Amino acid sequence: MTWMIIRLVLSLVFIGAVLLFAARVAKKRGLGQGNGLIEVVARQRMGRTSTVNVIRIADAVLVVGATEEQVTLLAELDAEAVDAALDEHRAPVRVGSAETVRQSPALTARPTSGALAGSVFDRNGWGSFVTELRERTVRRS
Image 1 (cartoon, helix red, strand yellow):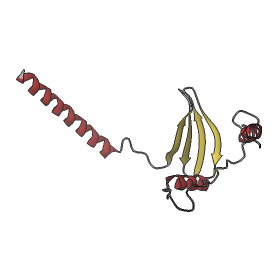
Image 2 (tube, one colour):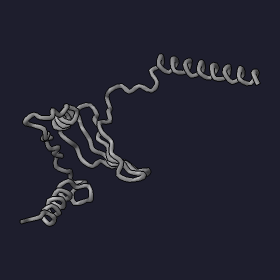
Image 3 (cartoon, rainbow, N blue to C red):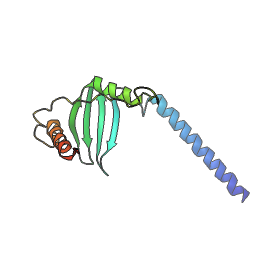
Image 4 (cartoon, rainbow, N blue to C red):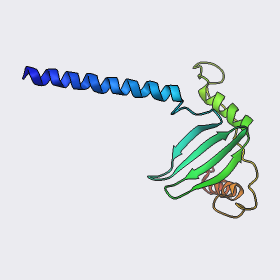
């Protein structure tokens, strides 16, 4: 029984040493580190296999939809608006101050290109759909 415990502890120490060695080698070679050119700003799962991602590539901010089969460009956002929204989201809310409700700046997408115009991914089409839906569901007294 004692021999099994000693063997177990030695095995765990050996595995830990191998993992530390592999981590140092990877760190020296720069593996697993990005170059800072591409950054995933936000990610939202829409279903079991689909996500919507906000990605910053250099100075461009792109909204892409990703499934198991493909990645589709949905919109291109203004970088300053994304930065302002992120700063507003990260800012602490002071309870008791005059502005307890934060007003987040609206993220406005640039007009869609001809390739997306009229498709499901057309921002203008969805915008008019949401506006119409709001009009139909608003309670009026």
